[in-house]
Length: 140
Image (tube, rainbow, N blue to C red; front, side, top):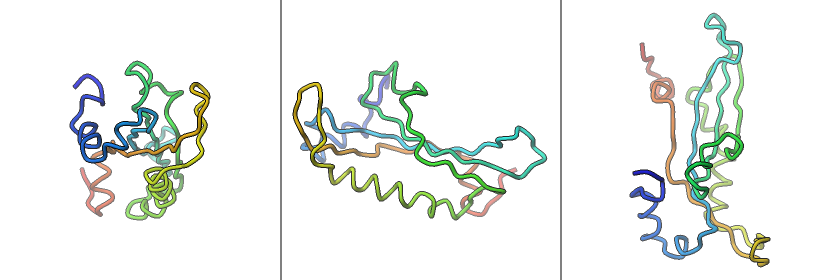
C-alpha cells in the first residue's frame, strides 16, 4: 500500500456506501492520539495528550505535513487521562457522527456550488503502550 486510497478500508467504504464514495469532496480521516511530557523531565508526572485528525483526501506528499493536520483536542493534567479519556473524546465523536450524517450547505469555491459534506473515520493511530494504561494494566 503506497497511499491510503489503496487500503482495504478505503475500498470497503466505497463498496458499502457508494453514495459516500462517489463524492470526491467527502473527507476520509484518521484519528491519532499520543501522550508526551511537556517539560521533558521524567521526574514529573505532568502529561499532555494530543488528539489529531489527519485528512487523507490530500495528495500523499501533503497529508502527513504538520500544517494539514488538525489538533482537535489537547488533554493536559497532572497525570494521564487513563480510563477517563472517553469523557474528553465524547464531543469529538459527536462531531464525527454529525459529519458522517452530512453538513448541508458547504460551499465549494472552485466549482461555485453548495454541497453536503460528509466524513468517515477510516482508522485510529494510537500509542500501543497506552492501551495498557487505558485498561488499567501497567506495561514495564
